[in-house]
Length: 125
Image (cartoon, rainbow, N blue to C red; front, top):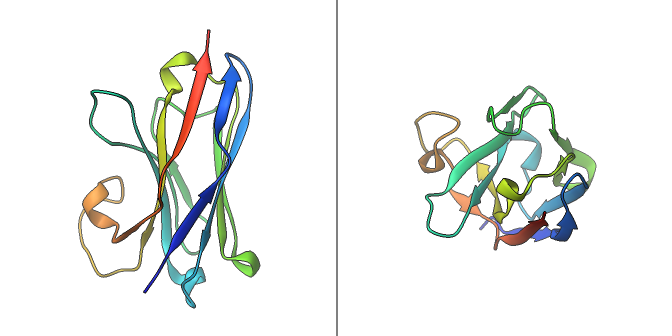
């Protein structure tokens, strides 16, 4: 069973930065695609970023240029560095693991089979 434990998040002023972390218990973490999603109140969960096992990355347009996803396979951890934060970035952020069991678009939540517990990010104006 794969478990994802998130840390980071919190309250930050607009223009500030935060780094989210997600540590995975899976033995083959290095082979997983890892993603970050977010869900704002009253809205559907949306894709934020993904990093493939070999390090290629993809970002939602809304965060491109302001966020960086990275991974440290030695620590079984994926990170999301968010800069120039805006109030619209306020949401619960989730990390997710794509172990290859599911199909679909890499930006679709259905592609991912394990999820972190979520962490709140609040950006004040």
